[in-house]
Image (cartoon, rainbow, N blue to C red; front, side):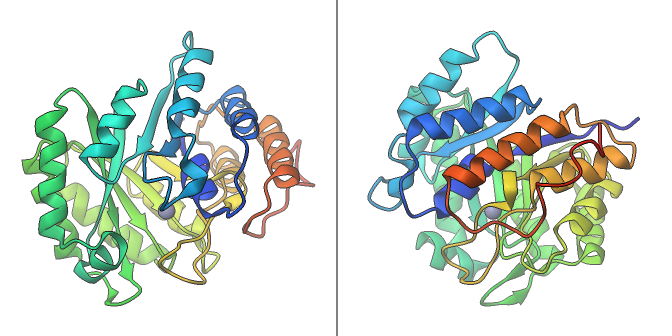
Length: 299
Ligand code: ZN
């Protein structure tokens, strides 16, 4: 049986698109529920300016409280950081791991963080230099396509990974930022990336705009990726890609993989219960799967 690590990103990628502030207590009930359902790797929040993303103003307290509450459990908790300042804040809150984003597409990077890719790489170098103990995953936004430049050439993905590798990055997320990848494209990209960088850890991060989230995720898994990112309920969107959907829903991915003989170590019934709870307390953009049926369909 092949083991897949489910990487829950809803508390960051999902919540960041919810306009109304979700009280920290509610966020923590959802995070605790995910952990109780068996999730071991979680992106908790992002350390960004509270002016830019007011939803994340509680990042420090949320991280500290989650670490304290689950100190006896073997969890991999991390947060998104946009720069060195954010990385320091994350480390200060007690995290030993962060992720940071650079877009493969120059135009998307400029729109997203108002920096060229080269400038973003300098920022990454600063994080590595100042915080050498902090594990950093590099999220490669627009790995498959860019809302401005169209389909992303695989060579561009490889060259950004090369630059990241030279800064000591050993883990990368292949991100379908606007959710327009196809399973064939995912297969081709993963194959090329694994051939060029056989030693790096890879995550797949798919948005579900065209309802191909599970198909693209499966294509990545069948191409050898074992770390699958997803968001509870498919909650989300993208502030720089109007109309884009949230991530593929965690429960859809878990259902598919478990039924196909992969081992996720997630309790599906408990996961659905947390998803139902989230939908009652967090108003947002959810992808269209059902939480009301299938409780006893997957183990
Ligand atoms: Zn995303």
